[in-house]
Length: 313
Image (tube, rainbow, N blue to C red; front, top):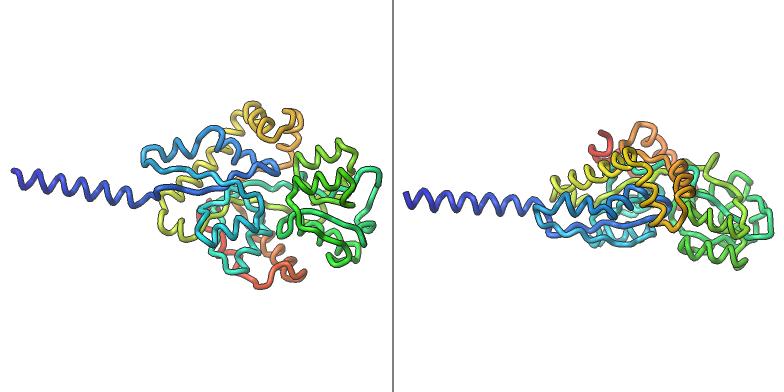
């Protein structure tokens, strides 16, 4: 009888050890509020990931990394497991550089909240940017927008003085007149417009922005249950937002430092979604061709291989 008890205890201990091995001690994930990443904001502010992993005592390590390029570097080094929000231009460039990165689920198609904004006091066109200083984040969909808009006017990125700059700093620079134009998104566009800076163009007619959640491939392979749970929580956040829109907008407005009315405008321009479609894959193929043609990406990748099955269902 004692032998049976010992065997049962050993079996339970082995089962507990196996269960623990299926989950990491911690999960590192970005917290990126801009442009208007409402799923990310709601997920963090409501403690949804913490609640989802509390029984396994998994620590959620929120990391503020706004640059898609820096997110890719952190994932390549193993310092970051998930980018809650990454634009597909950054995704493709990271993958082209050999970064073991993959799409976990969709986030948004924010066509209406990315723009090139000119300094106050001038009504600039894209053509007027020749020889001018343009500031904004390199290696992002905003960078892609600038290249596409210039190209449509017979210009190239070499025709402007493009200075790599964080979006918040870019907004400050253009409003102060220290730059002729800035690449801005969401609430930064609203703030710049309020300060007299005029929007030159948005993405409409130039690029189709897509924001996705990405994961370090090794994490998804090593901890499939934890990976699936993070994806499920991100989608649950979107479902909660749609069911509780007024409350979600209040949460988003507070996080972004805008009014609820402004948050509603950002919501309308964000195009939130979760499941990728064939149209998204085709758009990724088109974006890759553009990035390669314009020297923003050095090596092509198999686009379909970047998308994990979870992102398509």
